[in-house]
Image (cartoon, rainbow, N blue to C red; front, side):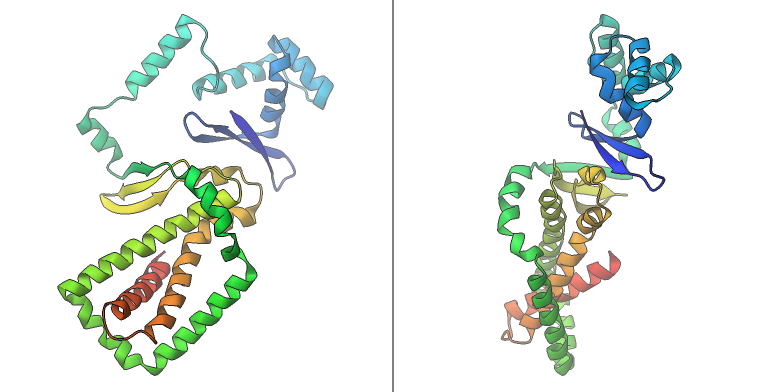
Length: 279
């Protein structure tokens, strides 16, 4: 279990407790965090109250300590020692079991299927991609996008004429490949940005929202970041990647010869723009 502090707007500390075994994050207030910091050196509730007064000047009674104990037990943040503890965990585990029909009824709105544990690869990849997070890269991509829009505007009729081709079998295949590329890079953008800021990315895979399939990246560890700018960067990374793909694809479309490559550039550009606008 690890706890990281966050500065609250009202000046009182609030903290995120991370349970790595269950990959869960729990928010606690500053008073609770203070009690937890003193927990290892105290043997009784009275000792904990006295230590809180001596260290923080905080008035704490045994009722508050009992409430904290119930919170820790309910969220399975304590080590079971007695037979009663193990029996309680066994009962909780059995209650969480469902048959396939019960599981489907309880989870049809959101089903997540992890396919990768990407963190070791992301930690090696993130330093290689560090130049992409520079201001120079942002300027180059922005200028490329503006140039691409200008060049496409001069060939607007040819650009629009590519649309009917997408309704052929070959065009549908190209469009499907484009969607796969854009969405994969979208999720990779979230993942690399999260690792760049020191967050864990335990899984990537496929999820179904009301039976609609889509890719997902678990960046819930971003909760513990104290910087709102960093949390925003992780959330916006996928959108930024899509816009960068659109900028590069529009620019390349203007120069590529007729054929599969030009059609793929068109599909990448239009797919990226459509997905970005639709978020």
